[in-house]
Image (tube, rainbow, N blue to C red; front, side):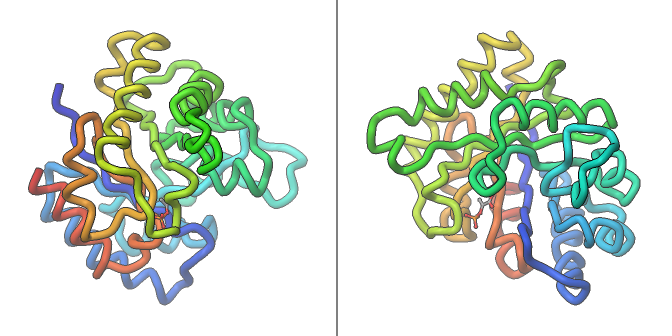
Length: 248
Ligand code: PEP
C-alpha cells in the first residue's frame, strides 16, 4: 500500500514573531513537493500569525486539552487552536508525558478531542533508554499504542509517531533496522486493534532526524514520514528533509 509521506516539524517552546520568516522557505518547499505532506506544529501563540503568513502550509498545535472548555487555567482546547488556524495537533509527546505526567488515558482523551473538533492528530509513543536496554522497547511502545489509541482511530485524521525518548534532541538515532522493526511491531499492533485501517495509517519516525540521515530513515520499511524537532526550526535544515522525502 502506498502512503503519502508526512514531514512534520515541532518547534517546541522555541520561536517568536521573527522566526516565522523561516516558514516562507518551508512553504515554498512544500509547494514544490506535491507528493509530500508538510506540517509544522508551533507554540500556541504563533498558530494564528503562522497561519496568516503561510495559509497554504499545514500549521498545528503542540498539545491540546482533552476537554472542549472549562476551568483549566493555562490550557487550550482543540476548538481554540482550530479557530487560530491549526489543522492538526501533536498529542502524547514524550516531553509532555514526562514533564506533565500525561498518561496513555490522557493522551487518548486529547486525540479524541482533536477528532471531535475536526482536526488531525499525531500521536507520539516511544521508549526510554532504560526500557530499551532492558529489552522492553516493543512491549512498552505497543502498550502505549493500546492505551492511547483513540476511539474512531482512522488514517484520514490520525498518524502515529515513534519517537524513542533517548533519540530526541540527542543526536543519537536507532539503527534503520531497529526503526523498521519497531514500525513493523506498531503496524501489527494497529492491525490487531483496528484491522485493515492500520495499513493506511502513517507511521512517522522522530528523534534527531537531520538532512544527513533523513533519506536512510525515511527509506526504512513502514516509515511513512518524520516528526522533526530541532531541524524544523530553520528552512535551511527542514527543507532538505522535505526534499529527501520527495525523492523516495
Ligand atoms: C521531537 O521533538 O519530536 C523531536 C523528534 O526532536 P528532535 O528532532 O530535535 O530530536
